[in-house]
Image (cartoon, rainbow, N blue to C red; front, side):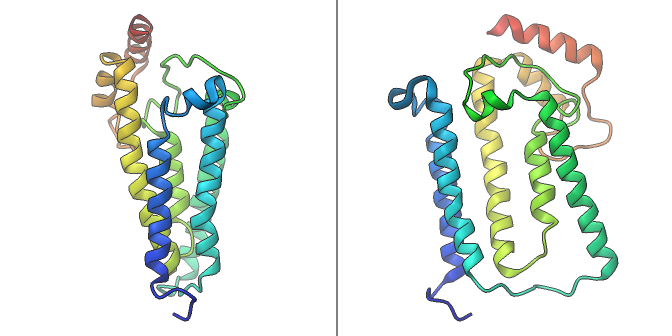
Length: 204
């Protein structure tokens, strides 16, 4: 591979590692002493800046396709990709987007949307679908593996934070509902959902 760097794929992986480490270290209340109530907004702004680096490196590297994709698989891949995008748009009904982005300071109660009744991390699941339905090249494979590892590790870090606030209700929820990939027969029924949401209110 003719590039300005001797180990371009290693450089790409290192840039993802840098993003993952910085994103995890700055999570939680790390930025509050500097930014106060705007710490969430600052966290997201830094994340956007940091994630730009691996994508710039990825876009600058020549890519080699890893296999010849059959036509039928191409259309299946596109269908899954579009389904994930539609799913992501649908999930926005159940999130406070302004609060998530940091434009408003929200107190988020522990509630379980229709998506959360089947999977603990709907956005991570949809991101995995989007990641692995892209055309598979050597450079994108590095990105896909790195992002997948980050989502797996990040989901566990996030759950430790949730368990500190909701040690009882979320622990029960976690035993019932799968984390990143939905499984048939493992879902939260309505009665249990209401019971866990009521229990969560007593833990805050």
